[in-house]
Length: 293
Image: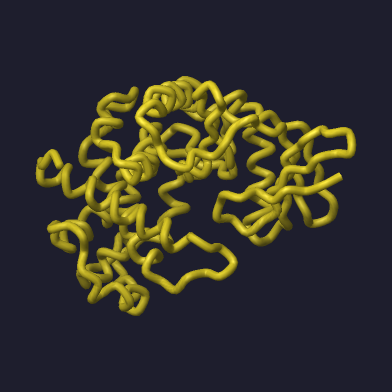
């Protein structure tokens, strides 16, 4: 018996491939309840049947004491280290399958992603000195470390703040099951080019197009056009203003947290957040100004 910890990912929980003495391989996720990590393992178990072959097959699960354990098949695939041009077609197919299976959500136990993300909003409103959606002033101290950091786009902060302030009414009623964390390290590529999605760990609902919008800046980091990806997808008709609201909200969180000190236990986290913030802001600028590059 031997264990091989997962090389990718940013969640501090057990995620390992276990190989038996007879050579059988299984992927094990485990974490305690109470930290949010055990709850994520639980959610993955609930979602396994719904997701089906979009992700790995669940072999079994257990709840010893406060711990939650889930065991999955090992995918004969590698995490997407960078998005290749030949990945874009299969990616659009996966997104279409997600729409067919998950919109509307087949589960009635979800909570709105818009509400779950609310505590992470407020960057642009704080920088602009504007009240947040509840009428309270966001904590200025939370953004002091980025107040003098020049933005990589020419869009005024007050415009970003206005978009951010409309997050909840814009997104709260979305009916689809939402993955919520689509990035290249949560997508696996098989030898024949098929893509599979891992880390289904949230029981969230949102507009169906939101997973694509969350993913597109990650695709842009590999040199591809996020707007072309959206317009070539099954979500080409996503509401323009709503997409802009999402991009502003996501970019604010990534920009603020990406410039915080490094987390020793999660190497690469801040770099990933800065990358996400940069490409989300650049896409938003293009959409707001009508530029093509």
